[in-house]
Image (cartoon, rainbow over all chains, first blue to last red; front, side, top):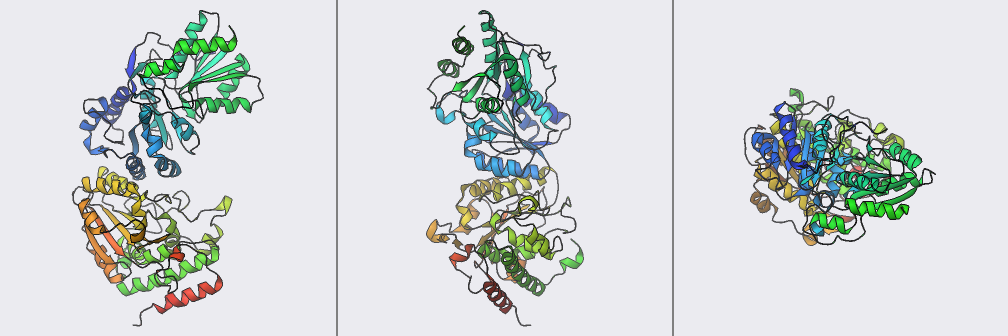
Length: 322
Length: 289
């Protein structure tokens, strides 16, 4: 059975960056002890900007220097702080890869690396796309990797991360994204996916922004008599293998949807689990192909690659011949 | 640190440095794995002065909250610190040899791991990582209103890594007076002289331009090492002043005549004959008093 969650299909948009900024400020007001670090990537008028203004003594802006930012965050954590560090998405795994690997993961410190502008949501072309980060993070020991499905879930993640051991990556989109959940009154556990819609013909597994796309695609598929289960795989590491095996057993068809390269991310993780399971399963990955993405407004790019709800539904119907 | 330890004289520290150099060579010989002897021997005088006299540090209580922190950015020289730790009574040399890169029971390695060795503040090894971490620690002390100081020991070849300069800029910007960086400037790196590889000079001018105060010393002269460390103002997180860089001019391989200024001794193993010659050479540096 799907977990009892109240879903939102009405395209109410919320920005994870703004909502988590508000949440951090609340947490600071409540007396929680943490530090915040950014790299010239927080607008003074934003919610995070307001946090920095309200609590200047605990907020550091290192300027445009992501590797320094991540190493410095490790040092702050070694001094006894929980650290939230907001990095422009593509530069977190690329510019600061060695620091994530050695300073954060190997030192095993409570730094929450918040990578914004996930996938192609930044616009501006491939230098500013974060398309290979999940592939990298999956192979780095000690990391917990979370892709909140919507802004409110991101706020839950940020709050719950205060008491979670070790380092964490939190991957969010650039701006406003549709709310998946109508309210925040549901239980969230790191490493435990949420089945947000039951279905019997196939399972769509999404993470981050692609959870909403999958949910909308499942709605469309109902018009064709296709019953799709939808899983919010919010934690990429540790991975909820059990949910994948259950989906393979019960629906016989699993399709992953992710706003990153299809190589090595969500689709890669699910493929590995299915391949080693000996459960006969039809399987397909939807995501960015192995090329630098075409230039365009993010929603147009996602549509171009068949990652929007219509594209996903079309791929599913072709895959199932229905 | 108790008052007895603080009464260490320069002569006592010099003798201690000689003993540590000898123990280090014995340790490298016994593990049978290449140690980075050149850069380890060059930094011994500074490390001895810090651990035995100038850092607020209790080897019996390495997690003491108000201890001074030392980050070894040149992580490949960790055996120098391990040798000091065994001399301070934290481990025996037998224990360290038995637990050196021994798969399931390893605690010690070419590069230090903070989770295996209590005295290690940060796991390092990849070069150019110590300064951002040390800067974060110094900022953390300020945020928590704590008086402890952060020391960071960096190699000179390592300064070719750009992250050092990013962190130098940040520490200068935030005026982290509770941060002291020691550059172990032995002028050699693995492939040859630093100034023929990718010159870092003029280092004093560069550091001043990045907002640091500079103290330049002969880092293999214990009197000068102690003079520099004694001149440090009290560590007060509230006082904003320039961070301090000690340019510690040293000799790579210091104390072992056949290693001094020899690039090939950047790293190497010691056989029995090498060890005996090395110990004799180090002993010969002991001042007759």
